[in-house]
Image (cartoon, rainbow, N blue to C red; front, side, top):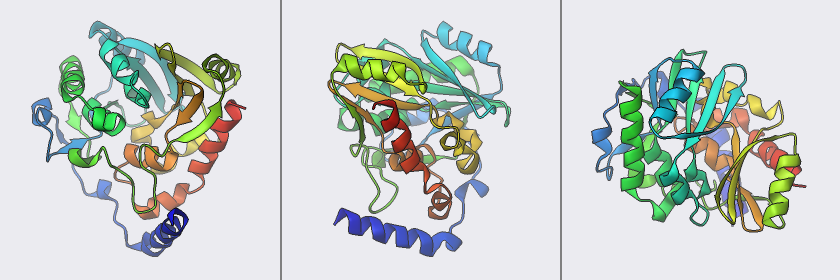
Length: 287
């Protein structure tokens, strides 16, 4: 049945390719006000916050002054640098079962569009924590970022808050829980394999049996933000959750759609090979 639904979804994509209108062509960014998400139910949540351009050193200093720990940084296609950061509250949430992806926030220093872009903790927190979402934790993170970086704009990329926990791109596409299992073995062995791979970037230990690792992808695979939009290139690097004796990653059909909520069916066909390529790249790292 799942295979049939997937086939029907693919047919729909092809059929509607010429009929889609990209919302990003007509939507207008608005000034961000964190208070609007104090009670988020029934409201839209922007995926990102965009601000005035600053360099990587300044961005890291501001994050550290606000109480964050810099986990690592990653240059994306020579177009900018993604800074991954965390704090104790985020790590505590991420240590919960299958919630490790929520432990990191991202800030992208965009050298192409001359701006900075941050993940909205409420948006990604709800998507990753699912029924375990604690709004007090993630709203406080949002307030901290808003006060640290001054006047911000809410990205036009957004979804309704109430839909984030059960989000999937369309019929037949994966949900959050439909993760890829990319490796299996003892926790220590999986971490050792990750570190031995040329794709390994950095790690963050969340508990005795929960660790997340940032992994690079094949050079060709990494280029997909050039098609989906460099303004959201902080989608990279890819994160793998090592929990117990399994290494898991978000299904790219879910993760890319969540990170690019304006992506149309027609545009998705332009990167149709990318989810499979990501799966292959990550499996290779944990052989």
